Length: 331
Ligand SMILES: Nc1ncnc2c1ncn2[C@@H]1O[C@H](COP(=O)(O)OP(=O)(O)O)[C@@H](O)[C@H]1O
Ligand SMILES: O=C(O)C[C@@H](O)[C@H](O)C(=O)COP(=O)(O)O
Image (tube, rainbow, N blue to C red; front, side, top):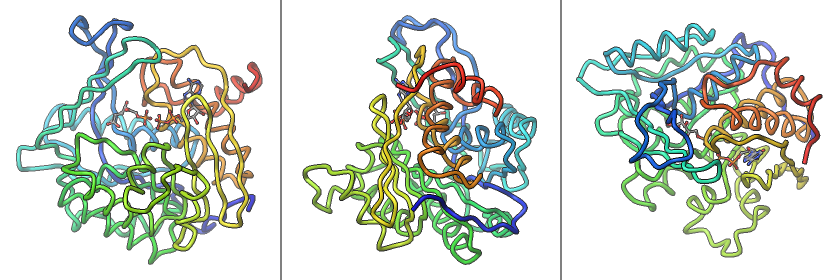
């Protein structure tokens, strides 16, 4: 299995569903949060980062989500529009919900963590009735972030979006995006992740995220191959298991596998690696590239983003990735 095919006759390339938040990234890096005094504000949330990454690569993108009715919500909407992302699928909360915040702590390039403020957040208030079926029908892909399954009504909204995607022949990319603080318990997480993965064409996750999905399924040896195999009986065509700086491995429904290596990086912080890798990888697949070339491109995007201060704002444009790939050697 070398390539994935997408519906040629749809005007949008990708519609993402899930959280729109704020990242507050520490300016004084290499120190703990307790000693950090200033932060820079960026749009954040994994699916937002991926949509921004795709849009920077000149793909036609849209978003389905919900923002707070406040300055932060308006900041997010403006940033998405300025980046060429269609926002008619983004509803505004009227119940007094707030914008989710992610404060990042950068103790060292290898020791980063995120402090999340996610009580009563607008993104998890997305209602099924607010999911724009027309946007999904007119898009080649739907990108689902697993965190949006954490709570109702966003959970049902995502499950409905998945049904619309299957109904309209829109390929589903499922990024597991496991964030423990949003979930009540691991069993619930595994159940809803399964429901989404079964409806997905391309599944992307880290080894640890797949371990979460598989807690009732055996695979005690944590084999990537066994992980991938269980989804090919459903809709999956490709399953990607990410291994941080050890690279990634993509399995195809036909039994093939491809190993993705990494590019060198002057790492400032490790978060944003997965989102930029996803943007670059999906871009490659949608361009009709073979899987290994798509993985290489995703890895290059990841190196650029982890060598920068932000996730969303650092998402590279096409010529930036091409220049980078020409100038460095893959490890
Ligand atoms: N230290 C690193 N140096 C270079 N590339 C990296 C590094 N860490 C991650 N990457 C790239 O980013 C991809 C995704 O990273 P990973 O950490 O596995 O995902 P996530 O950010 O979702 O946890 C990797 O497959 C690799 O290509
Ligand atoms: O997803 C969030 O809510 C926070 C992100 O914006 C954040 O910067 C991040 O954690 C990126 O995640 P990754 O790409 O999986 O490392």
